[in-house]
Amino acid sequence: MYVPSLRPLAWAAKQIASLQHIAGSGRLRLGVGLGGGPAEKYHAAGFRREHRARRTDEFLRLLPGMLGGQPTPVPDAPGSAAICLRPAMPVPPLLIGGQSTAALRRAVCFGDGRLSGFQTPREFAASAARLRELPDEAGRTRPRLGICLHAAISARPAAGLADMTAATMQAMYGLPADRARQLAIAGTPSRVATHLRSTPTQEHS
Image (cartoon, rainbow, N blue to C red):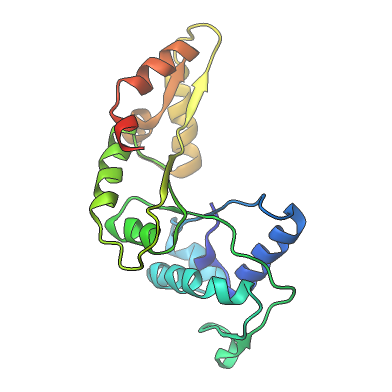
């Protein structure tokens, strides 16, 4: 998941343009997230954590013009200079992350899809229902829905596999232990499939 609020916006757009060029037409799918972590991380990058939502929205609003080679005034550029990137590139399909109402609105306004993380399938289904209730002021097609699940799959039943998966998530993402255990999915393929079938995700996806 790409976090533009940790980067100068013109630099972020240039990175995406370079990825588009390297990947070739139609191959790049870009996930955009609000970002998290401590305030010190943003301070080290020269930004403030409390500005991340505003800067993410600015980035998404300006991205078509910047990638399209149009002179685009960028708020965090020195003197608010107009940025003109060459060669022009199309905007890749955007998958917007986040669970809050503001994140869902961001997906409706800017996204081709909404990509969820750190949600159980049941929570994902609930937020998908909320997304469908939001007004689409831009008249765009409703974003497609996707969910990232953390799963460990084994050929045979393995005691403690779910706990190991939860511990890995806790160490990597700083999740509370009980929340990591709630999100972790582990077991044989049939057990994982049964777990996913027991949730109401399909009716909302």
